[in-house]
Image (tube, rainbow, N blue to C red; front, side, top):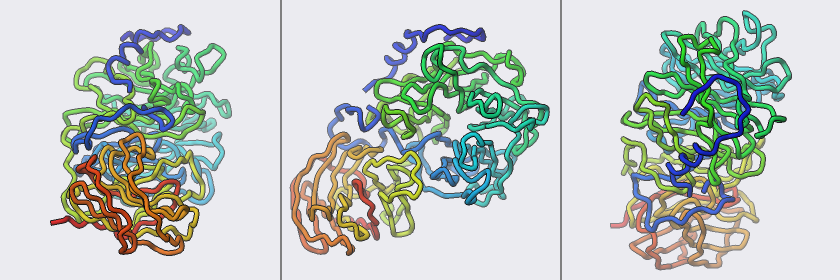
Length: 548
């Protein structure tokens, strides 16, 4: 790969794209795109499929104080959530660590938070506004202790404008990250060149402390050296740079950035390298002539990457978001795939993995617990569509202020190993919704992902709208009904659903009465969870009892 500084408007070369497409299978990403055939049988426990979660602008780090990952994400654009997980393929348990006030300059549009551990404290860098995009500035949360789930104090906004104090005036800034280089810290962000211009460039400034910058801001590079950096690939369209992220390569300082239009399928990554000694000198940064990472036919609108080690530290993984559909918009999901960062050459990240393609889990990922009393869940679906409290899961709830929301057959899977033969029981509350669709139990399930039928396994559900008990199976791409039975399902009441599975025999009881008995042995093992289809339902007292 060639790095260069000179300004150019050459058309995008296609040779690299062809090479990269050969490096990975290009089999589907969005629900709207036909997915590939799946192999027979349940997915082995040491494999997973993408996407792993709903979300955008993902940020995850390995906790230096405990053996876990910390995922930091915006929650409904009004709060900061930190999810704790032992895996890079699951967000884990959500913890809201800070909520914005009802109004003011840091009350709305909380974007792209990043969690950093600096000098014994945790810092969350994020952009926020008063509800008007042109007023976005960067703010910082500082933890009061070394506990990332503890209390935080708000600092800011950071001075990210022009002049020696960067406040002449202060100027729009988002997507701030931290670069540590030669015993100094630098903040790098996406900012406007002047108030109100909507022209986004990458800027850098030295940090006086984790909550303050010093010295004038410096623009790292132009945002339209190449046509592929532009919102649309044409000379009449503007360039756009955002989402800077440090690539953790030993011996070299690399900066990945997102470019183009985040709302279009053509969003992609470029790459800068620091080839001199001074990060504040734009002449010491070189730009890759070709995209570093770009969309395919099936996985598109990719961007805002970060990088994290496997649990045992032997691998590096690339985390990014991708669009769910080709129409302009910001409905996205999170993907993870391996990247080779063990040498000192410019990494070759390949092409974005296609949805539903099995990958080995990151090296050192712990196996699921066998403790049947453990009640940790992995949720697949929009973060505004669920809530979990002790003994209760609510799925499919309509958010008060939806943010790029979409339905996907929301499901919550128990994060533990389940006996192949067992009794699963749960209480379902449709909250009086007579037109409610499916709510029920997933079992012998594997290969879970974001999507209505994005799992291999069985589903036993209740449908108040049609007064039916149903049983069916999914293979990761499509639904097949196996059996149905009429039943009185009062949406105003609560209903006990019980599923007994023994070898290939499946029995479903509603409120103690047997409704379905069916034989099917397509799926022989897997996990247990609950699921809704375009429905808001509450699940209580989910229990799994092994059969002797």
